[in-house]
Each structure stands twice: as C-alpha cells, then as structure tokens.
Length: 95
Image 1 (cartoon, one colour):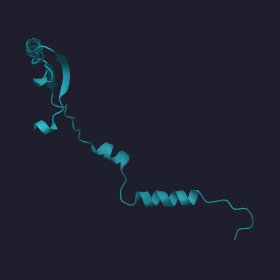
Image 2 (image 1 turned 120 degrees about the horizontal axis):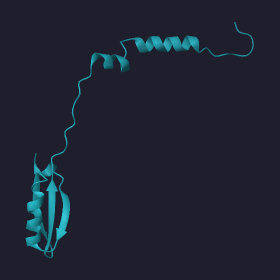
Image 3 (image 1 turned 90 degrees about the vertical axis):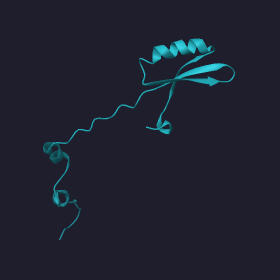
Image 4 (image 1 turned 60 degrees about the vertical axis):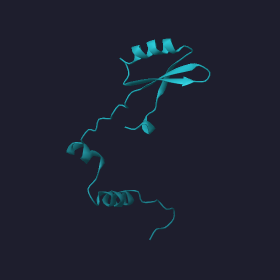
C-alpha cells in the first residue's frame, strides 16, 4: 500500500520533541506505523496508521441464491398473474 492511500490519524500534539519520542515508543506496540511530524513553531504531532480491516467475503449457498432470484421468465408470469387478479371494476354496462 502506498503513502497516497494511507490515512494517518493525529493522536497527540506536543511542544517538546523528547516527550514526543517517549510517547512514540509507547504507541509503537499498539499501532502498525507511528511517526512524529514537526510543525511550526516547535510543535510535534504524533501520527498513527493501522491497515484497514478487510471485509470477509462469504460465499452464497445455493439455498440463499434461490430466495432472492427468480428463474428466467418468472417475473413475466408473475406480472401476468397480477393483471388477471387485479382487473379494474367499471361502473355501467360492460360488454
């Protein structure tokens, strides 16, 4: 993964480099990457990054596929069935 895709999170902002180094040493155990960024005037930001959690892909079983999807032409049969059952009622003579 390149630096362009990483989203760094600022954990702390400190005024002393020595205290930033001590905090970085503690955070190295918790996070994958830890860095100290120097800002103006004499501000040190501690930034951390962890790889994003990968989503597990579950394979669909044939039983779950049948629930939501229809065979070819089933929608047409269902549409025709609804038209027959839902005839409009007209007032007056029909013929």
